[in-house]
Length: 417
Image (cartoon, rainbow, N blue to C red; front, side, top):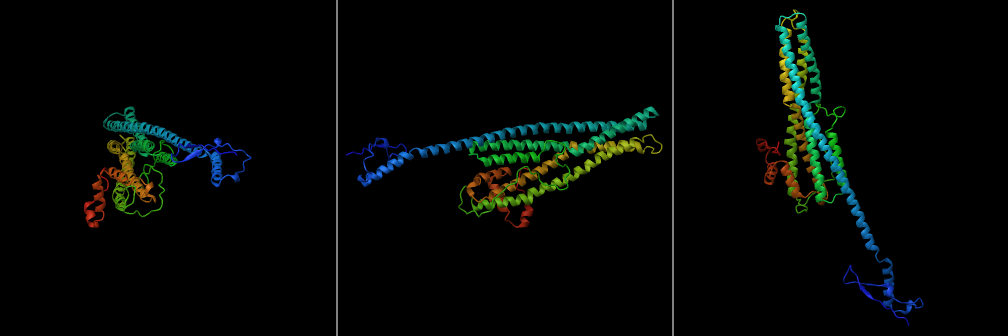
């Protein structure tokens, strides 16, 4: 009678379980299975099933692990590609910013030099006793210089080189900031396709906010409605949820209320103040941009009547005085970089608007585990506002005070600007 020999071997995956080698079971096909004992029969059926499916699960796990590694590797490669493009963008904006800053200084010096020369010629034409060719040469030279200055000023006031330079400086800083954030994501987190999509959207948003070309895509330097600068993609937040006091991931009810109060202060104080300042600077810039070409154009016309008995000395007075006034106006506008100040205020308002949207979108995230850690988020908000954590908490607590007391304090959320 045939016998069954089953040799147990210890599995590497578990020290307490045994696997059976099906090859070590010598049985003949003539041996009816029903004659075996019930335990032996069940044991034999399990052996057959194990021998059929042995090694399938580990192979699937290895394949899934390899697919995951390949996917992560592709994500990291895409992020590195975006980092390279980001660094190239930052260098481009840096170089162009230097170029446009040079435009501002060189054009201002040239315009002022031409204006002073034209005014001097108009004055010489008035006091000289020359007639004929000498008087005509002085009048013609003065008129040509004033006309050229008027044309250059029209172009300068249209493009605002100082504002262009400030735009490129902001773009350089923001592209460098994005570059460092991507580097941090690769180093400290497990990057996914969501991070790749977010990085691409931020690069494209920066390209739209700070265009490189002058023609076609240049930002309007004298907008009808002043709004904060926006250089980030629209945040799509989920519905709000109530956070419990003992919630996890560093968040609790008190911290959420604190962040809500900070958002309210940013909207009422900081953002509103910088939008107001932007409007004031824009009005001043408009006045200066109109007066400069107006003075030089009037001086160009007046210089043509210098020495004429019809106007007497009025032509010389207008030609010289308006030339001096144009020099002062141009120095105030472009030497004082009023366009740059407008862009700086507009960018500051955009910075506070970005903080508001960032805090609100974080608070609206339903799953607290998907939020940034609450304690880290609080530290970032405090440092971005130039405050310590106790100062930030005190600022939020003071918002609950009576309105009359808050008006007396007039405290802004940010201490940086």
